[in-house]
Image 1 (spheres, one colour):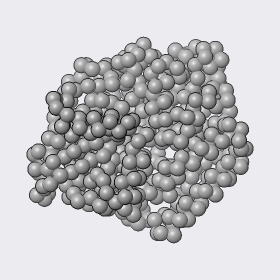
Image 2 (image 1 turned 90 degrees about the horizontal axis):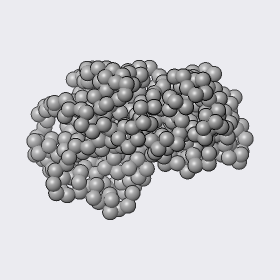
Image 3 (image 1 turned 90 degrees about the vertical axis):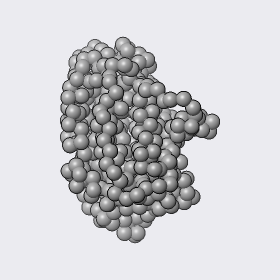
Image 4 (image 1 turned 30 degrees about the vertical axis):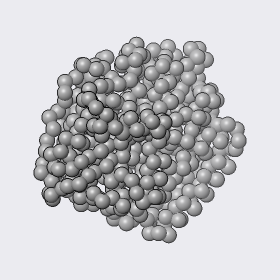
Length: 459
């Protein structure tokens, strides 16, 4: 994204570009109403000044436009000037790192992956989490583990929502190779995907690139074989037969079902491939399908969703996204940021609805109509119950770092994309699986030891 594009998006989100913000959607525009009514609770303290927010530019346009208005309306009501800047998933990690390293920037920052590696330079949000739990019950464990460090006892991030990572498959292609309903195991993905590629020339879409989706797919495969980055005590456990077997499987999957493009993908490549009809299966949130509802309705009708694929040992998926809000120590609007987080969370029904059900709440009690929406999609799914599978998404989704927490070492490993890079080297034939896993394990041990020496990782 160019700087001029960033500037235009900033002005639009800040309400400075002139004109009103029209409701839009990547999905079926006009099929839904305006959504849940907003609620408001007076802040616990008197607020003033300004609040600047840096966040992900959601792939659902309706959500971006809703959030900008929502934040500014709250600001006017409490006497605060709110400015929102939304940037792409590929640009966001670098922007966050640069601001935190420089010690200046936005007051409130939203990440879509783990931000635990920034624990030393952000405020503890324990009081916000405790207040949210007091108001709405216990936070979903997946989100709690994505913002809390049990070693330090600090809530380095506040996680009010998440997005599942189901399998998105083209029903017509999989039915044609005898897998009506789509693949349920990694072996079926391999065999069916190879037959689809051979017969129809349509490939699978699991990335092997240094980007977020590739990292999520790599972890799902490792977990399915019984491998993991760490154990519950936060000790590195990557190297072993299970991880070697998983990496060898990914190399075979690449050779038989994919092409070289997966080595250079970014965070939206598999979305575009599915929407364009070029891929038979991806692991992603429902955003690609929502886009297809508008730009390629025939593909949208053919896309259905599946839970985590089963491997030799388990069937787990990583979350597609976990929304992690942090307040940098340099922020001059800490109390304002905390009050906004509580206001935003209280309005989870509107946030979920305006994401067109791509995002799910960390406090489920706040969105009692979620099951109803998933059973009968307000945004034009055909059939209307296509999203019912997501009602069980928390049963087959685990946090990054599972079975341990998303600690600072896990955050750094994720940000360096060590796991997809490991798998890519083997798929390219540059290293054997055993050498690649051993080398990655050694890199991880150094990272873990560095954080452990600072008292921020257990084990």
